[in-house]
Length: 324
View 1 (cartoon, rainbow, N blue to C red):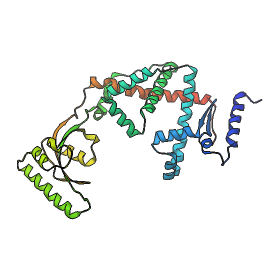
View 2 (view 1 turned 90 degrees about the vertical axis):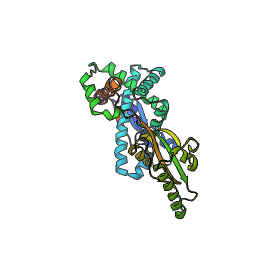
View 3 (view 1 turned 135 degrees about the horizontal axis):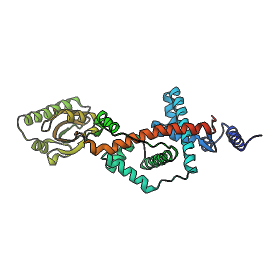
């Protein structure tokens, strides 16, 4: 006799089989790629997860490396199956995380890592995540922690020596962001393809550079000769995080000491003399100040381990089938 779950799976498989090559794009996107107990994973979900994890569209990933794509796809289907199993358990136990709890967790993360909201948004953009997607990710992590706390009897205990050891091994992660205040004299070239004009401009820039080396005031030279931003303010461009500068400016900012100037540097539309006005940051934050951040890192690591072991047990009891 066939039980209800087997009938359900047969029904799903029947739906998959009736999709023909002539199916519409919407139907293809929504076709089932895996069954997890009474839940389904669609091709659309799979493709979105591939984009989220790899930062690439599935089609582009496949064109670049067919074998690598297939391995990545298999790994992500496995991840989605685990997520479905966990979500089912979360629903079963009626675990809920309120919006204000998500907001508080994000504020704690920003405080621990000394991030402004703009800094956080910039980092998310680099990772290809929207703020809403990030909030959803934090919500799921909080749900997962509650699930582990409820289902795993043994409590997570972190020893103080573990926290201190992590601090010693990852000191560079807890340095104040290095910042540099720059001034510039920019010599603009109307036609960057005109070698003759470029050579003349280089000689002009070098002459100004030599005058500054001989004692001329940089700010006054900037007001007289600069054709770039900040000229009226003596070339002052303001402060920047060193890590966010383009490679050319970053190298100069790291090499020069406050008060020093660079030789004329070739830029896409001319030449630029840079002066480092001041440098800040780079100091190691004291252990008491970052202890909570380290605790969170190690706690999440332990949660991940316990979660992996626990989800493995649940998966052994669950019905799962990949159908493509």
